[in-house]
Length: 226
Image (cartoon, rainbow, N blue to C red; front, side):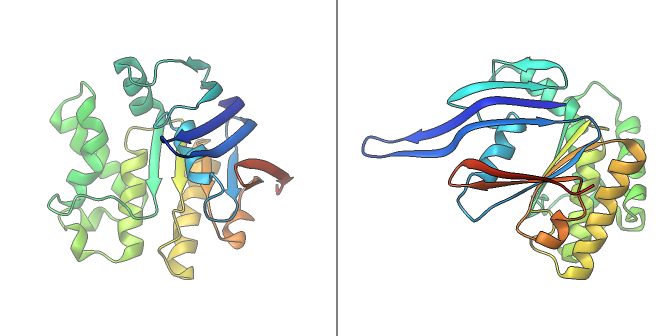
């Protein structure tokens, strides 16, 4: 589903050059649940953003679901990203003055579907994460775990083939974290959704199929956990 070859990312200013990623080769199979670990600043989020077509590598090539990506700023790439990828973030990124169901609907606004169908799909996604009874609430009326479940509903509402999750349990206690991981595992096992998750939590990483470790922008280890 994702093929990265010789991926490097270098940030340059007038006075300094910083290498965030160095010559990464990585294949993620269809239906795989992959976790990425490493110390802060090692390039984990940069790698995830490149996989998600949110950031462009300095060197290397990317293929996502059979599509070779070459024009990152194009409308075609934005459409592809909207249809194929779902994103989950540590800090939820919910819009405070929109209701829960309106937040979940957001990715569908960029598709040519009716308002009635958007509402139906959003309600279906909320049902799948156990929050349909909260559809009229606002983010400030939810717990951290509930906010993350809304974020997951938003990520899956368009039925993406791939979910990219950046520290999805990082702001949650262990009980809420386990609930979020159970939802992600169910999506992977029941729907065959490919998931790539950045995490600092070894316990959460062990619930995935495979773990890769980064250090100073380089891939230093890979381990099968299945």
